[in-house]
Length: 270
Image (cartoon, rainbow, N blue to C red):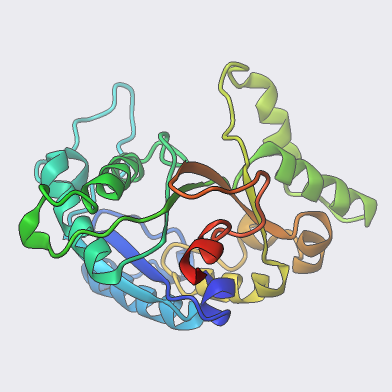
């Protein structure tokens, strides 16, 4: 997002929930007054992050579902985003798409990146909105139809990236934070396929901006956590791209890509 915003693209982040049931993961921020006003705090954090990234952002108004824990898992709370009927959940995003008129949409994969119910629901909503926004017969009160041209899934946390970072840290004589993660893969279901990476966008020059935007979410991100255990120069050397899976395209493009707008720049500039 930081790269494309600085190259002149318009970027809009649609945030479907307010994080009302989120936890405080940074101990330095875990104070009674913060917990008492967490939704407002989360909105202020998002405002700082979007300013750092140079993007626009909208909250679409749904209530956080929380991350259910336990065995068996408890039921989701009534009225939460994950339980919202799909058509109702799609409507605000259709409106945002028709107003903003994006060529490219990014979202989570079918598993939500990790199985948070709101991430999974966001995937379902984005896939449906990609089609519905272009349909004149769908949600006619949500604005003039608009057809996005490409739909991508984030593919940020995959084995090849972690292995490359791990080996580069070892090569430099640094303690790798990824050894335990790599060992845990031996216990995973080998049938669980990773997303095919179709698109690797060079972003190394923007990693510091990315980290500052991440740190703006101070209730969620501990500056001393493993998020920042791998130095930026190691990341640039070992894996300087942000990675995506092209799930849907209405333009011709050659694989692998290095640009989310591949095939679109040519079409739009004709």
